[in-house]
Amino acid sequence: MKQLDSIARLINKFTKLPGVGAKTAQRYAYGVIDMSEEEVNDFCSALQDVKKNVHYCSECGNFTENDVCDICLRRNKDTIIVVSYPKDVLSIEKAAPNKGVYHVLHGTLSPMDGRGPDDIRIKQLIPRLDGVKEVILATNPDVEGEATAMYIAKLIKPFGIKVTRLAQGISMGSDIEYADEVTLARALDSRITL
Amino acid sequence: MKQLDSIARLINKFTKLPGVGAKTAQRYAYGVIDMSEEEVNDFCSALQDVKKNVHYCSECGNFTENDVCDICLRRNKDTIIVVSYPKDVLSIEKAAPNKGVYHVLHGTLSPMDGRGPDDIRIKQLIPRLDGVKEVILATNPDVEGEATAMYIAKLIKPFGIKVTRLAQGISMGSDIEYADEVTLARALDSRITL
Figure (cartoon, each protein chain N blue to C red):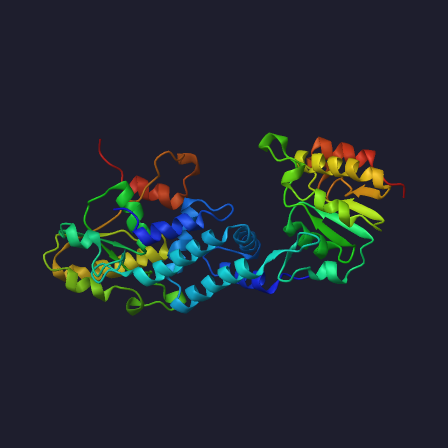
């Protein structure tokens, strides 16, 4: 006995979501069958509303329901924080709100995967640099994130703007014993005088 | 900065799926934004199709798109395998197809949660027992599954039909060292002469 056609189709759709495999998709599809018709219709309209209403802010590239997002609209533009993905904006806003406006690249440079500077929102950053005092590069501290940060730092240098990068070191609450060597070495290099 | 309204609403909908928390729901919602409009519409119609087309088989209670499911329609009814959920039908069909028809209870007895015999599909099993040679009770080997199996076994006894239960013991590929005590004790009790 195989899966019913409509269930199989829904399972297939669920596997399109990030990180969802066949088993999980099946559990979700069975979950949908147990929902009321109203719940399913609500789910549907929520899906379509997001697709219809949410798009990129024409300035920073973050998600917005308007032309320009709330942050770009209201906040001082002295500082631009460059991040790889919209979800990073949320994380930074939770940790330290009001540091500045954002610039979302929607990816990282990755020569291995064939993603060059034109494949992410790097050139859109240049026209925004006018009057900016500092650009904080908040890409991930991994190979791709580092490469992206280095590339952008080099690109901005001629403008004479201060370019900074998030500090790297051991995390709060972590254990020095278990910190990886690279992190520990960086934490030592960047040690702070008390 | 908070989540956009339509994203927040979609995240909320995703958390209605079994086992999905806020973080996962957010990842899914962001995944939806990156889908094409066509993909989202497909996803939507798949959701609604499942809700519209899939319902319980009027005989066994398994999912079907017709009145009676394929298994009930075509298969010999000498043996009825009683399971708790439709997903169990799939698992058994994969492991040992064609053993018999099914009876899906859609739950287990659970006095703790206030689920009694009338809350699951137990009484629907009685009219199906005519001409049946064996009822295999394939509920989970946990407290609720055992209780459900015991209840049904007692109920069927007056009909003089053979009632069996899935064997319990150590799993293939597992390690005796790590088997829990109850499982190991049952495996010893049910040892097989070679």
